[in-house]
Structures are given as structure tokens and as C-alpha cells.
Image (cartoon, rainbow, N blue to C red):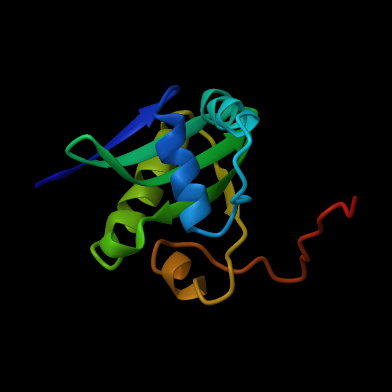
Length: 137
């Protein structure tokens, strides 16, 4: 079955939450507010891309941006059983294409350890002399 890629403003929030959890990026407790948070993430990202095999959402990625100058790609993941088939690369390419159609030239991301080669193969390079920071709350 063919994989399709779509930029969406709405998607099955439970399936997307499942992708976040499968990647280890979300709490595992059952809180009904999580589904509303996920809906907001999808709706308010400049671009939220899903990979579909039939009707099953098997991958996702998103770009956050002001829509004019800079964009950050994040939350790119594919269900483990579908990895190694080019789906992650296709998600990134779909996001890059969407951003470039809007004339956004600065596209960045932060790679998890071990994925640097994946992003290099897509044209990304390390930002020399820069260090990412996170507010510690």
C-alpha cells in the first residue's frame, strides 16, 4: 500500500498522541486534556505533516514559524515498524517544500543524538559556534 503525505490543520488526535508516546516524547498517564493539547499543536503549527498508510497515521512532523522569515522543524517521527523505508525523509522534504513555497529561507532544527547523519543527508549542517538552550522551569 502506498504512503501518502498531507499537510493538515486537523488529524486524529489520539493517533498523533500515540506517535508522540511511541517516540518517548509524551507522558503515558491518561489525561483527557492531552488530546486538546495535541489538537492545538496540529492547528497552530505553520505546517503539520502526516504520513498515511491507508487511513493509519504512521508518521508526522511539523514546522513552527511566523510564516515569513524563520522556521524550525520538530517532532518528526515514524512508527518503528515503518522506519528505514524513507518515510522520515519524505516528511522532512514535504515540510521543506511547504516552507520554501512560502519563501522561508532559514530552516533549522535540533537533532536528537544519533540522527545527525539523517539530517545531513537532507542538506542540514551543524550550526557552528551555537548552542541550543532550554528554559529550566
